[in-house]
Image 1 (tube, rainbow, N blue to C red):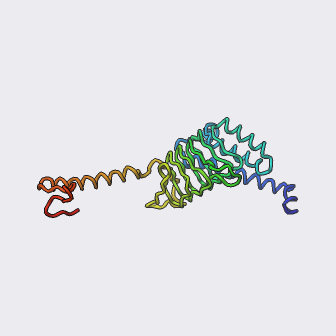
Image 2: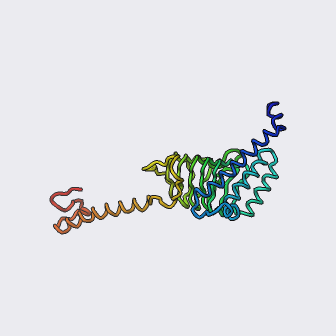
Image 3: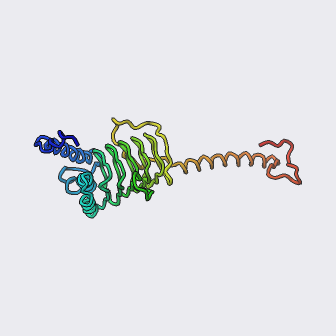
Length: 255
């Protein structure tokens, strides 16, 4: 640490600047609730009744102590926040501005998780690790990512900007920006219309394609077409199912 920086910490203006920056971060967190939850009616209601906001603010405080080597105290504060809100965010996790947790009960965010700006999580989401090794083992989320209720994002993977992860998806591989992820394991789908940073938050995490249903419908349609062709041949007395003693029946066999 430079001598100027050390001296700066004894400067009243340096401290006032740090406090102003912290106030701005907390204010942006509060504003993000109104931008992404139509049920929010007043600042007083949000301040008193939104555990997601309490959890984010609690994390910002516990993380401040964690980064300054007061790790036990930071961890203890995070557990106090967890007992109050039902949301567990490890103080070692890095959380960007305007982070919003809607409802939030059951959300778990691991130690090495990294979360970008304007990210939205719904209840039951897990940003979990998959390794016993020290070091990076939790996901990294880009900006404006939305993760639906009950989804699990596991391992040291990266989720690109403007990606929407559907409810109850299980994501174990990195995802490119502007993707939609559904299913177990999560299947990556490119958007037909990209989501831009200037667009409104993409919160419709139930508007997701049904990959299996669409595939089955196409298969059933194909089977119906083939069966109709077989029915025509049966009506004409021509049958092409199995050979008799090595000889296929019919005058003109074709597939």
